[in-house]
Image (cartoon, rainbow, N blue to C red; front, side, top):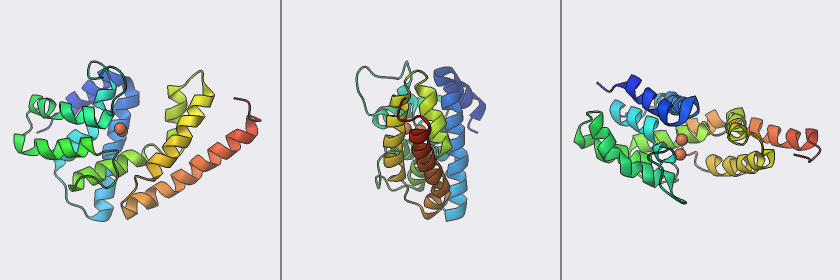
Length: 189
Ligand SMILES: [Fe+2]
Ligand SMILES: [Fe+2]
């Protein structure tokens, strides 16, 4: 049985509630998508990959300089999965899901598709606004630039019909925020 409590605590220690709760939301969304698409999945593979897909963004796992966080997180998966007592037969599927969580159309497993679509949904909407502004507390222009980039990139990652439906309102909200923000700020931010 996978120790979810331990996984939560590990993510909390690495990146606070910001990343722990992103991981938890991603899992909830992935499960909802699986249900509406009637996609079967392996519980351990989905839970583990949802929890740790961004792990390389945080020290001590974070590499020096610029890096592909999905690729680097994937490299960590075999050893980490072993620490949690996951059977080696599942390592390949976990690694695939993590490696391709931000690469459209890559990978074949249902868990890969579920993680990627769920992760994209969690970076759209008012949630995206909260996430990007919380990362840039004293540079709003950077937050807005990040939001515009994320709006483009994450909307493009949606593949499942149910994910497209789930994201529709979020994308509208995000676009509304961006246009109203421009007006209210008078372009000064
Ligand atoms: Fe990511
Ligand atoms: Fe993520």
